[in-house]
Amino acid sequence: MGTTKTKLFTNEVNAIANLAKAVAHPARITIINRLLQTETCVCGDFVQDLGLAQSTVSQHLLALKKAGLIQGTIQGPSTCYCLDVDQWNEFRKSIGNFINQEAALKSLCC
Amino acid sequence: MGTTKTKLFTNEVNAIANLAKAVAHPARITIINRLLQTETCVCGDFVQDLGLAQSTVSQHLLALKKAGLIQGTIQGPSTCYCLDVDQWNEFRKSIGNFINQEAALKSLCC
DNA sequence: GATATTAATCGTAACATTACGATGAATGAT
DNA sequence: ATCATTCATCGTAATGTTACGATTAATATC
Image 1: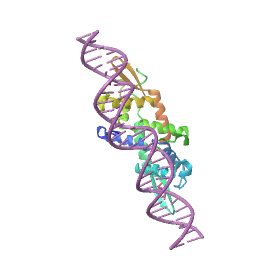
Image 2: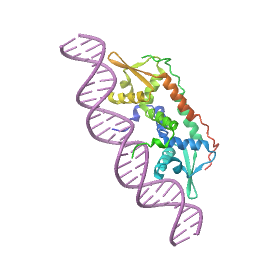
Image 3: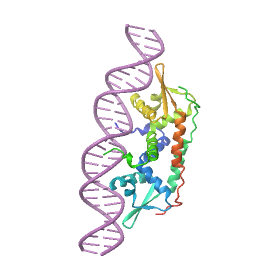
């Protein structure tokens, strides 16, 4: 059917899957890395930076916005983006809880 | 076109995106959580556990296998799966490098 | 007011993902 | 040898994703 059956899983698990989805594209990771590294918001030049069409970049930015990771405000003719720091820290915590799990298994058993 | 333009991005960024994709589904996260918590490999009962069709579960297991995160060996009539502990630790490291980044920005600037 | 710039949105094509049922291959039990 | 069990694989339908060009909306400049 092509649609994830979210009802089968816990909210926590679904949440992690959604966060993973939000960053499951190199363009979006590049955007986040860029926003992480600058001390101000970034206005405009993502398109040149990424090498994708303007509309495509806009879509990726929207995806990150929907995930709550970034914020954009109109500033003159252009739109400026910055990381939502609080949400980024929430993101880090959630993903952290998942990946900080030490395997109970010590070595390959099969 | 529907195909990610991986050539535009660095290997590192593409690698993180692929890892994120591998866990970007609640069924696959549930499988990993299960394998993380058991001290032995898990034989069989994922289908009942997840509530998805047998063929669907098989596909998710294959995806995790392709990502290198799990290992499966045939054991009698059934197949037993366990986490690839080394790969899991690699995974943790890579994702960790990404999410351990502290935002340079201290508060919302726009 | 007319024009240029910037980015969002719309429409669309190609491809990927998710899911299921059916079939097939391998092993264990009878 | 036959049958049941278990999982992988195949085929396929529905939906989602990625990407682009074209259009639209908003602001800045002339």
